[in-house]
Amino acid sequence: MASQPSNTEIGTPAAETRGGLLEHEYFWRDRQPWLRERGYSLRPRYAPDWKPSWLGTGKNCQECEDSQSTLVDTILDATRPDGTLVTLKAIDTVAHPLEVEIGQFLSSEPLLQDPRNHCVRILEVLQDPFDSKKSIMVMPFLKMFDAPGFLTTGESVAFLKQAIEGLHFMHDHHVAHRDISNMNVMMDATPMYTKKLWHPLVPSFTRDFSGLSSHCSRTERAPRYFYIDFGLSRKYNPADGPPQELPVFGGDRTIPEFQDDSYDVPADPFRTDIYYLGNLMRTTFLKEYRGLEIMEQLVADMVQSDPQKRPTIAEVETRFIELSRKLS
Image (cartoon, rainbow, N blue to C red; front, side, top):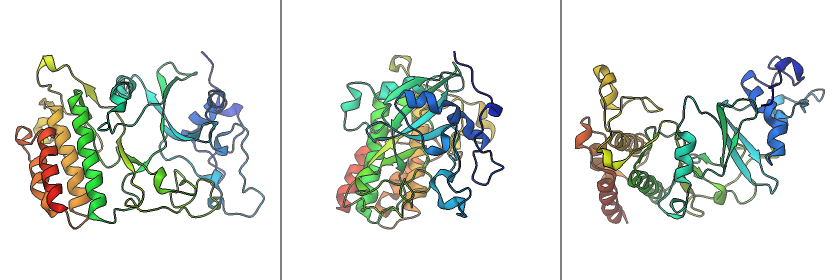
């Protein structure tokens, strides 16, 4: 296995230089040559011999694309030789031993061809050359699902339809996501950006920082929505009966069955998924947008305190379809 270069061996400008490389970015800088050999080009910032483009020019570093540091140390964008943008995610296979396996299962045939499958596709999995306990998953380049905002009730309903059928798909294949939140649902917004794509860290700018990004509405060019992050997900054998799992917190920490003295009480992860999705619907849509009041009782049932009283995802989808028809 290759030895990882030390920070002192590489002269990349450090954080002391305003806009310089931050410590959590060394991971990607050190792997840049290897990733390039595998067909994935990182932004100029991550080249081992990178020199900030603004030095000696009098420019504010924030005006330059190569000053933009990644916010999450495990996630970075990359470009394939054909110009396709992708997302790389470094996985700690000890902390999250099933993330790659479940992601690949949901991306396998014939599941991949099912139109109800709204799980992010795993394009490739790379074994890290420096650390045997790390893998790097390659996925499509996606965008936060709620930016730009929803302009019509129809756009909101289109999102909810995909989110519900996507969770139904997972549950049909005995997978509980266990970490649904507004951070773990994204969209393929490329149809909306007809000229240049957005910058992954400053979406209001184009990727090359040549100007402001422009986009169509969701109504004009509909995006497709995807669940991401299967680090807490589990796949169950239905022959074993309804699963029971001890509480584990993800992005949404409001789950009723995880509160107070329930920290050591097992719960059904499929019922918890219903709460997660219902709470996303409640906080992101019902509280923020008008026109969805007809969904209030459905959402109230999804987020009630007793998990066993929550509807199944099949029941949620049936009721949602009936309510959607009334809206149209």
